[in-house]
Every structure is written in C-alpha cells, then in structure tokens.
Image 1 (spheres, rainbow, N blue to C red):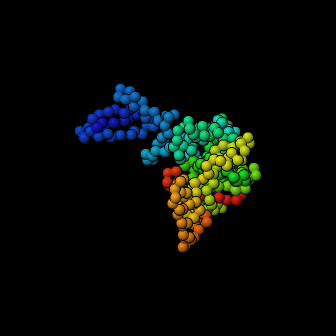
Image 2: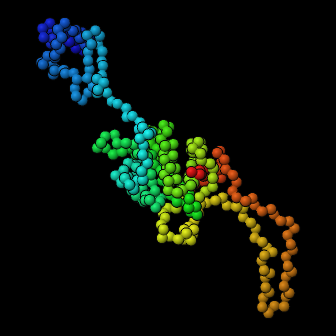
Image 3: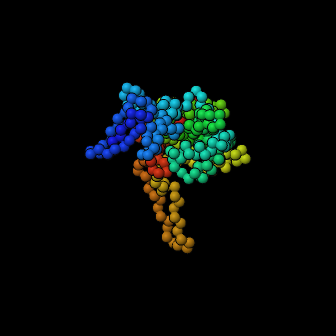
Amino acid sequence: MQELTLSPGPAKLTPTLDPIHQVVLILSTTPALTLDPACQPELTLGSACHPEMTLSPGSTELTLDPARQPEETPAPNLAELTLEPVHCRPELLDACADLINEQWPRSRASRLHSLGQSSDAFPLCLMLLSPRPTPEADPIVVGHARLSRVLDRPQSLLVETVVVARALRGRGFGRCLMEGLEAFAQARGFRRLHLTTHDQLHFYAHLGYQLGEPVQGLVFTSRWLPATLLSAFPRASFPRPPCRAPSLTAQAAPRAPKGSSLPPPPPLPEPLTTLPPPPGGPPPQSLLETQYQDLRRRPIFWMEKDI
C-alpha cells in the first residue's frame, strides 16, 4: 500500500510506495492539513450531509455533532390525547386505514369504505389522536375502535376493531382508548358495552369486563326501520341445544285407505320413561375455555361491562 509523508512546509501529503505496501501517516507540527492536488482532491471535513468529525490534539478521536445526531421520536403524552369520530376528520381516513391494516390486512378500498360508513347514527368509528407534531402537520392516529348498536338492547353498544399502534403498545394507550370510548358511550345514554377477544382476556378483565353472552351487532341503523323488521335479521350464533326426538304420542294415527275394511291400528303405548329436559342456557365459559367460535373456528370470548 501507499506511504503518505507530510512535507515540512505547507503540510502536503506526498505518496510513495514502500516495500510492504502499507499506509503510514506522518504528521508534521504545522496545523494545516491539505492533500497534494497532483495526487488526490482536497479533503474537507464537516459536510452538510454527514455528521461533523473533530480531531483532538492529544489522540485521534471521532466525535459526532450533537445537533446532527438522529433523535428518537418521543411517545405522545397521554394527557394530550383526544378521541374523535373518523367522519369528523376525513383527512385522517388514510392514516386510520393504515393503522387497522397493520393489524388485520385487508383491501385498502374495502377498509376505506368501511371507515366511510361511520356516522353519529352508528356504527361509529373513533380515533385516538395525539397532538400535531408541527403546526403544519396532521394529528397522529394512535388508536381506533368501532361502536355498533346491539339488536334488542337499546342501551348497549358492541365494541369492535380495537387497535393501538404497534410502537406504542404496552404504554397505557389501550387503557386510554377504552376509558375514552366508555365515557363517549355513557355521555350518549348507553349503559353497557359488549366485545369479543381471542387473547386479550386479562387486559379487558383488568378494565372491569366480565364474561358474557353473544349479542348481535347492527351493521346499520335508521330511525325509519321499525324494530319488527330489525328483529327479523339473523341473530348471533348460540350453541345449539341437543336435538329432541319427536314426540310420537302427538302424531295422529294414520287413516285407513278409503273403502278399506281393515280396522284402524291400535294406539301406541305410553313411553315408560321420560328423558330429563336439557339444562337451560349454554354451559358457562371461563378465562381458560369457551364454547364459542368465530367464523374461522377459533375460540372466541364474549365479554361485557356496565358503564
């Protein structure tokens, strides 16, 4: 390799080749350090695109300019978060769709269409927002939850699609989102919330939710639809009770063909024993086991809370 020797004058670097081909830097006492133009272009430290480097007089040190070091984005302050309906902030639809699709991938057009159905008449999508990082920027979407009316339960709401940004989980934002939507629902006259979960039972139990029964959320509501029509929609799938054998005694005796002289058959004998009626209601569920399943046959837990 090349041996670079500094001349005693204006501190020029003159390249020469030694037998071992190693690079040796010999510094002169003059402070100026420039490269010989005949060999290489001039070396300049402290570019605008890179961190500044400073050489100390004693030993060779490399220090970074603190003003140019990358800074970690601070987490939003919980006290500064707000909860707003998505239909009141249409400019945040894309950011909200990205947040939900990060957890549950889905067609972007389908996700935007679902968010676009949010209204004060329910279903209603709520966003947990942090303040604007700069006056020109939009607020940051931290979390999302969807609220729907419940069939035959006018004072209940079904909570769905609860999600918090991955980078902010485990810092209290999930609790802030749930407490905010509870206050939102209570202020509008609702007294109970229902939800489902696969693996967050202890999180919701810590917030006061208990195991409950399935309910049917309404995809859309309107004051022009009577309750008799809404009750015709299919309800939530409950565990099917055991099938009963048809009562043979309730069946009428078959009639003899017209014109036949055969006598009618004798009546059937009374059953010797009566089976006990099936136990009322579905078997109880626990935090470790449930009899309910979702459309993908995965165990699902129904929970509820009075607010």
